[in-house]
Amino acid sequence: MRYDHSVRAGKRLLENGVIGAPVFATIDMRSVPHWQPWQEEFGSATLRVMSIHHLDCMRYWFGDPAYIYCSTRPDPRTRFSHTDGICSFVLEFANGLRGVVVDDVWTGPVREGCPGDIGIEWRIEGLNGLAIGDIGWCKNPYTTPSTIRYAAKGDATFHQPVWTESWFPDAFAGTMGQLLIALETGHPPAIAGRDNLGTMALVEAAALSVVEHRPVTPHEIISRNPPKKP
Image 1 (cartoon, rainbow, N blue to C red):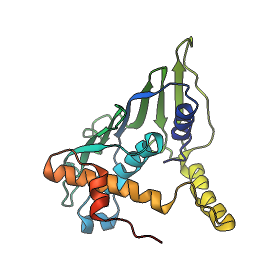
Image 2 (cartoon, rainbow, N blue to C red):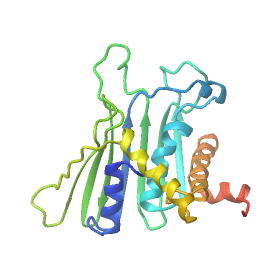
Image 3 (cartoon, helix red, strand yellow):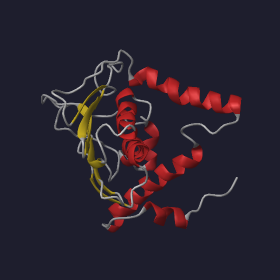
């Protein structure tokens, strides 16, 4: 997801200070995923398959949160045993930023005859402006480009760049290309395995939050399972 066009553009707006220091950020998914057969054996639906991307995206934009609180409930449509169907997260950052992620795989009875409203929208509100993105992968077809619109103080309207490329398959060129470059040059890839441990710690902190009904710091997970030195 870090190489989705709108997500990467959002990162650039943050780095360039276009929208100023971030105050509040959201990712709101309303989509019905295709579950994998192994998930039934694993006993997990959304958290470790869908939400992991959105939590990693928050880390990509803003770094590691100080705390995460997660609340879940089963999805009425999913038949295998699970507790993490519909997931909601609150991320607290040390600088005051708050992030909210909603992963709704029910979305209403859209598979049972009700008109649907499917999509994934993200939003970053800063001190100087705001950016709003729409992720194209859950639309039909998969190759629907993502979009972004952003504006800052003094702008008369939103800026809306347009891409012809899409997450599927174009964004995958970024992750695979980085791996090949790393192998060729010996330099760490932009998305490194050690950094992924931070995302996994955030996911496991969310899972612990569900069980214990409390905010959890990712450092609590890392301190229990410190990464081994290479």
